[in-house]
Each structure stands twice: as C-alpha cells, then as structure tokens.
Image 1 (tube, rainbow, N blue to C red):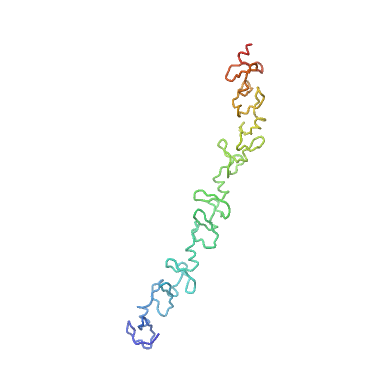
Image 2: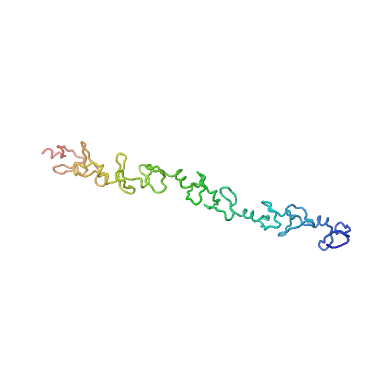
Length: 279
C-alpha cells in the first residue's frame, strides 16, 4: 500500500484511501476486485484483496473454497494432492487410486486385507461363497463359471456322490455300471479288498475279487473240480442237468475227445462221445 493521486481505472481521488498497485499503477480496492483480481478456480468469483488467496500451479482459490472435491474437507492447512486437476485430501486420493472391490465396488485402501483372483480384487469380507455367502478367507475354494464356491458347497452342488457312502467324490473315484464310487468304497463284498485297478466279477449285484469269487461263489467244474471263474482260459462254460464244466474239461470220459459243440451221451456221472457210448 502507498499513497497516490487517482485510481488508474475510475480516476477516483485516492488521497487517504486504501489502494493497491497493479503493474506499478495505483488501483482502488473496488477496481482491483473488478479488473485485476484473480478468479477463484472453485466458485469463479474474484478474490478481493481483503480475502486470503491460495494458489497452486497457476490456479487460485478463496481460502474457504480450497476444499477436497470429494469430501469437501477444507485443505488450506492440510496436505493435499491433485488428480486430473482436482484437489483432493490424502484419504480421498488414496480411494481414487485404489482398486475397486469386485463385490461391493468400493475402493480397497492400502493396508486393507484383500483377495486377488483371475485379475479381480475383493475386500477379504466380500470374497464369499456364491452359495452360502460365507467369507472364504484362507479356505480352499473352487470356481464354476464366474462364481466361486467354498469346497463343501462345491462338493454338495456339483460333485458326484458315491453310491456306497453317499458322500461327495472330490478326486479320483471308480465308475462301475454307470454309478460312481470312491476308490476306497469299491471293495470285494467278501474280504473288503479294494477292487480299483484289479480284476473282479459281479454275482447277484455284488462284486468279488478273483480269489473270493473262486473260493466262495464260483461253481466247481465237474471235470477238474476247480472253480469256473470266467477269467482267462476258462471263459466258456458248458452246463448240463445242473452240472457245469470248463469248455476244455467237457471231454469224453473214455477217449478224452472234446465234446464241445458235439453230440454226447450221459452215462451216470460220465459224459461219453457217441462212438464210445456204442462200445
């Protein structure tokens, strides 16, 4: 402030009055506000000499207008940041830059527990099972399409269930007669030996290992007295009047001629070919 004669703009006598110099020329307070004052970047009104002016990177504000553009917190005496020419407090700037939760779409602030999966992020409490809605946290989970499930819900909803124990089959398993089994549930009906990956046979809707089938279930060959298992060499069987033979054991008692697919004559417990029966 200094004394001068007349305002550069309105020519008012400035004797004894307050004025300012603009580019070395005296200007009354009214004309300074009208012609020379900076405009506030927020309210776009002039900033008069009586007001406190704040500036940043070539822009100006009234003190009361210098606020966070998100939460409107006054920032005249607070730290602040700029983003896309917007003035923001540190907290709002952090929110603006933070990734968005794929569940609630709110910002995931630095230091917050979060989960990242397939390029998306969640608050820890928002990463929940699609079915039971419980937070998954550090538990194991599986996905189906774009949805995630905790292991119990996934097994209940999607996994095959063992026909024996009715529980979910989460890995491996055996499929027999279009029905799923746990490997440890698919066992011999007699000795409970696991049958997965081994030879077995079915008898009256029960499965048996080869040894148990031979000893407990299979018919005995009337020729060699060994079990007729239906495995290997003994696949073909001859049945006659309640008795059974391996095909290779169904021979003439006298000349040992194979009688499979040939005419024969029963002589008591013996089987004879047509020629031997006439002798």
